[in-house]
Length: 243
Image 1 (cartoon, one colour):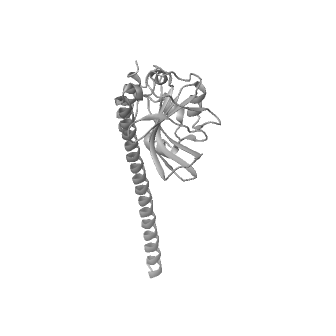
Image 2 (spheres, helix red, strand yellow):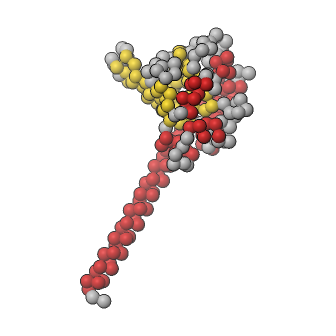
Image 3 (cartoon, one colour):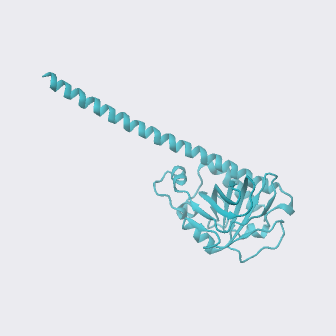
Protein backbone atom coordinates (compact mmCIF):
# COMPACT_ATOMS: atom_id res chain seq x y z
CA UNK A 1 0.00 0.00 0.00
CA UNK A 2 1.39 3.35 -1.02
CA UNK A 3 1.98 6.25 1.36
CA UNK A 4 -0.80 8.28 -0.29
CA UNK A 5 -3.25 5.40 0.11
CA UNK A 6 -2.41 5.02 3.78
CA UNK A 7 -2.79 8.77 4.27
CA UNK A 8 -6.21 8.70 2.61
CA UNK A 9 -7.39 5.85 4.87
CA UNK A 10 -6.13 7.64 7.97
CA UNK A 11 -7.86 10.85 6.89
CA UNK A 12 -11.16 9.03 6.31
CA UNK A 13 -10.86 7.30 9.69
CA UNK A 14 -10.11 10.54 11.52
CA UNK A 15 -12.97 12.26 9.73
CA UNK A 16 -15.41 9.52 10.72
CA UNK A 17 -14.18 9.62 14.32
CA UNK A 18 -14.62 13.38 14.43
CA UNK A 19 -18.13 13.07 13.02
CA UNK A 20 -19.07 10.44 15.59
CA UNK A 21 -17.61 12.53 18.38
CA UNK A 22 -19.59 15.52 17.16
CA UNK A 23 -22.81 13.48 17.09
CA UNK A 24 -22.14 12.19 20.60
CA UNK A 25 -21.49 15.72 21.84
CA UNK A 26 -24.73 16.93 20.25
CA UNK A 27 -26.68 14.08 21.85
CA UNK A 28 -25.10 14.76 25.24
CA UNK A 29 -25.90 18.46 24.97
CA UNK A 30 -29.50 17.65 24.04
CA UNK A 31 -29.79 15.25 26.99
CA UNK A 32 -28.32 17.85 29.34
CA UNK A 33 -30.77 20.43 28.02
CA UNK A 34 -33.74 18.10 28.58
CA UNK A 35 -32.51 17.29 32.09
CA UNK A 36 -32.20 20.99 32.89
CA UNK A 37 -35.75 21.60 31.61
CA UNK A 38 -37.11 18.75 33.72
CA UNK A 39 -35.39 20.15 36.80
CA UNK A 40 -36.87 23.57 36.08
CA UNK A 41 -40.36 22.13 35.71
CA UNK A 42 -40.01 20.14 38.94
CA UNK A 43 -39.09 23.39 40.70
CA UNK A 44 -42.02 25.11 39.00
CA UNK A 45 -44.37 22.42 40.33
CA UNK A 46 -42.91 22.78 43.83
CA UNK A 47 -43.37 26.56 43.76
CA UNK A 48 -46.96 26.23 42.48
CA UNK A 49 -47.66 23.74 45.26
CA UNK A 50 -46.47 26.30 47.81
CA UNK A 51 -48.83 28.93 46.37
CA UNK A 52 -51.86 26.66 46.83
CA UNK A 53 -50.77 25.59 50.30
CA UNK A 54 -50.39 29.23 51.37
CA UNK A 55 -53.81 30.06 50.00
CA UNK A 56 -55.43 27.21 51.96
CA UNK A 57 -53.82 28.52 55.16
CA UNK A 58 -55.30 32.00 54.73
CA UNK A 59 -58.24 33.07 56.96
CA UNK A 60 -61.61 32.90 55.23
CA UNK A 61 -61.77 36.63 54.47
CA UNK A 62 -58.55 36.40 52.47
CA UNK A 63 -59.29 33.27 50.47
CA UNK A 64 -60.57 32.85 46.94
CA UNK A 65 -64.39 32.42 47.23
CA UNK A 66 -65.50 28.81 47.47
CA UNK A 67 -68.23 29.30 44.83
CA UNK A 68 -65.58 30.48 42.37
CA UNK A 69 -63.32 27.49 42.95
CA UNK A 70 -66.30 25.14 42.61
CA UNK A 71 -67.17 26.72 39.27
CA UNK A 72 -63.64 26.63 37.82
CA UNK A 73 -63.22 24.25 34.89
CA UNK A 74 -59.47 24.87 34.70
CA UNK A 75 -57.10 26.42 37.23
CA UNK A 76 -53.78 28.10 36.43
CA UNK A 77 -51.07 28.79 38.99
CA UNK A 78 -48.16 31.06 38.05
CA UNK A 79 -45.91 31.13 41.14
CA UNK A 80 -43.65 33.96 39.98
CA UNK A 81 -44.83 36.66 37.58
CA UNK A 82 -42.28 39.43 37.42
CA UNK A 83 -43.22 42.96 36.52
CA UNK A 84 -40.75 45.67 35.59
CA UNK A 85 -40.91 49.19 34.21
CA UNK A 86 -41.54 52.79 35.15
CA UNK A 87 -43.95 54.31 32.63
CA UNK A 88 -44.51 51.16 30.57
CA UNK A 89 -44.55 47.94 32.56
CA UNK A 90 -44.46 44.34 31.37
CA UNK A 91 -45.09 41.13 33.25
CA UNK A 92 -44.08 37.56 32.45
CA UNK A 93 -44.07 34.22 34.24
CA UNK A 94 -44.39 30.47 33.75
CA UNK A 95 -46.98 28.32 35.44
CA UNK A 96 -49.19 25.23 35.35
CA UNK A 97 -52.73 24.76 34.11
CA UNK A 98 -54.88 21.77 35.11
CA UNK A 99 -58.47 21.03 34.07
CA UNK A 100 -61.26 19.01 35.65
CA UNK A 101 -61.42 15.44 34.47
CA UNK A 102 -64.53 13.57 33.37
CA UNK A 103 -65.02 12.62 37.02
CA UNK A 104 -65.54 16.31 37.77
CA UNK A 105 -62.44 16.51 39.99
CA UNK A 106 -58.79 17.46 39.56
CA UNK A 107 -57.62 14.06 40.80
CA UNK A 108 -54.83 12.78 38.50
CA UNK A 109 -55.24 15.84 36.26
CA UNK A 110 -51.95 16.15 34.41
CA UNK A 111 -50.81 19.79 34.31
CA UNK A 112 -49.48 21.57 31.24
CA UNK A 113 -46.92 24.37 31.30
CA UNK A 114 -48.07 27.77 30.04
CA UNK A 115 -46.53 31.23 30.06
CA UNK A 116 -48.36 34.36 31.17
CA UNK A 117 -47.37 37.69 29.65
CA UNK A 118 -49.05 41.05 30.06
CA UNK A 119 -48.31 44.68 29.35
CA UNK A 120 -49.95 47.70 30.90
CA UNK A 121 -49.48 51.44 31.23
CA UNK A 122 -49.11 53.05 34.61
CA UNK A 123 -46.70 54.56 37.08
CA UNK A 124 -44.82 51.51 38.29
CA UNK A 125 -41.86 52.11 40.56
CA UNK A 126 -39.08 49.61 39.91
CA UNK A 127 -39.95 45.92 39.64
CA UNK A 128 -42.48 43.70 41.36
CA UNK A 129 -43.06 39.97 41.64
CA UNK A 130 -46.21 38.12 42.60
CA UNK A 131 -47.98 34.81 42.25
CA UNK A 132 -50.99 34.75 39.95
CA UNK A 133 -53.96 32.36 39.99
CA UNK A 134 -56.41 32.25 37.09
CA UNK A 135 -59.74 30.45 37.25
CA UNK A 136 -61.33 29.54 33.92
CA UNK A 137 -65.06 29.23 34.54
CA UNK A 138 -66.75 28.95 31.13
CA UNK A 139 -66.65 26.71 28.10
CA UNK A 140 -65.34 29.61 26.02
CA UNK A 141 -62.34 30.19 28.25
CA UNK A 142 -61.45 26.51 28.60
CA UNK A 143 -61.70 26.04 24.83
CA UNK A 144 -59.09 28.76 24.44
CA UNK A 145 -56.82 26.89 26.89
CA UNK A 146 -57.18 23.70 24.82
CA UNK A 147 -56.35 25.69 21.68
CA UNK A 148 -53.01 26.69 23.33
CA UNK A 149 -53.49 30.49 23.37
CA UNK A 150 -55.73 32.67 25.53
CA UNK A 151 -55.82 36.37 24.66
CA UNK A 152 -56.93 38.05 27.84
CA UNK A 153 -59.44 40.81 27.27
CA UNK A 154 -59.62 40.74 23.47
CA UNK A 155 -60.51 37.06 22.99
CA UNK A 156 -61.76 36.12 26.45
CA UNK A 157 -62.64 38.68 29.10
CA UNK A 158 -60.80 38.52 32.43
CA UNK A 159 -62.05 40.02 35.68
CA UNK A 160 -60.32 40.89 38.93
CA UNK A 161 -61.56 38.41 41.51
CA UNK A 162 -63.33 39.34 44.74
CA UNK A 163 -61.55 38.55 48.02
CA UNK A 164 -63.29 36.70 50.80
CA UNK A 165 -64.17 33.02 51.02
CA UNK A 166 -67.95 33.53 50.93
CA UNK A 167 -68.10 36.66 48.78
CA UNK A 168 -70.48 36.82 45.80
CA UNK A 169 -68.94 36.31 42.38
CA UNK A 170 -69.60 37.49 38.86
CA UNK A 171 -71.09 34.36 37.34
CA UNK A 172 -70.62 35.70 33.81
CA UNK A 173 -66.84 36.21 34.06
CA UNK A 174 -65.02 33.68 31.81
CA UNK A 175 -61.70 34.13 33.66
CA UNK A 176 -61.12 35.48 37.14
CA UNK A 177 -57.62 36.62 38.15
CA UNK A 178 -55.93 36.86 41.54
CA UNK A 179 -52.49 38.09 42.52
CA UNK A 180 -50.68 37.15 45.73
CA UNK A 181 -48.14 39.44 47.38
CA UNK A 182 -45.16 38.33 49.45
CA UNK A 183 -47.31 38.71 52.57
CA UNK A 184 -49.56 35.95 51.23
CA UNK A 185 -52.56 38.19 50.61
CA UNK A 186 -54.73 37.69 47.54
CA UNK A 187 -56.35 40.56 45.71
CA UNK A 188 -58.12 41.03 42.41
CA UNK A 189 -55.74 41.49 39.49
CA UNK A 190 -56.22 43.26 36.16
CA UNK A 191 -54.52 41.39 33.30
CA UNK A 192 -56.41 42.81 30.34
CA UNK A 193 -54.27 42.83 27.20
CA UNK A 194 -52.15 39.88 28.29
CA UNK A 195 -51.99 36.34 26.96
CA UNK A 196 -51.59 32.80 28.25
CA UNK A 197 -49.57 30.61 25.86
CA UNK A 198 -48.83 26.87 25.73
CA UNK A 199 -45.10 26.30 26.32
CA UNK A 200 -44.23 23.69 23.70
CA UNK A 201 -40.57 23.24 24.68
CA UNK A 202 -41.35 22.73 28.36
CA UNK A 203 -44.15 20.25 27.68
CA UNK A 204 -42.00 18.37 25.17
CA UNK A 205 -39.39 17.74 27.87
CA UNK A 206 -41.95 16.75 30.52
CA UNK A 207 -44.08 14.41 28.41
CA UNK A 208 -41.33 13.14 26.09
CA UNK A 209 -43.15 13.90 22.87
CA UNK A 210 -42.02 15.94 19.90
CA UNK A 211 -45.40 17.54 19.29
CA UNK A 212 -47.28 17.94 22.60
CA UNK A 213 -50.98 18.76 22.36
CA UNK A 214 -52.71 20.74 25.13
CA UNK A 215 -55.98 18.82 24.88
CA UNK A 216 -54.26 15.44 25.09
CA UNK A 217 -52.25 16.47 28.14
CA UNK A 218 -55.08 18.19 30.00
CA UNK A 219 -57.90 15.77 29.23
CA UNK A 220 -56.58 12.44 28.00
CA UNK A 221 -53.60 11.60 30.22
CA UNK A 222 -54.50 9.26 33.06
CA UNK A 223 -51.77 10.44 35.43
CA UNK A 224 -49.28 13.20 36.04
CA UNK A 225 -45.47 12.94 35.84
CA UNK A 226 -43.88 11.94 39.13
CA UNK A 227 -42.14 15.31 39.39
CA UNK A 228 -45.55 17.02 39.47
CA UNK A 229 -47.57 14.57 41.54
CA UNK A 230 -47.28 16.61 44.73
CA UNK A 231 -48.75 19.60 42.90
CA UNK A 232 -51.65 17.53 41.54
CA UNK A 233 -52.39 16.18 45.04
CA UNK A 234 -52.33 19.70 46.49
CA UNK A 235 -54.61 21.04 43.75
CA UNK A 236 -57.13 18.31 44.52
CA UNK A 237 -57.01 19.22 48.24
CA UNK A 238 -57.36 22.89 47.35
CA UNK A 239 -60.54 22.29 45.37
CA UNK A 240 -61.99 19.77 47.82
CA UNK A 241 -61.41 22.21 50.68
CA UNK A 242 -64.38 24.06 49.28
CA UNK A 243 -66.79 21.12 49.62
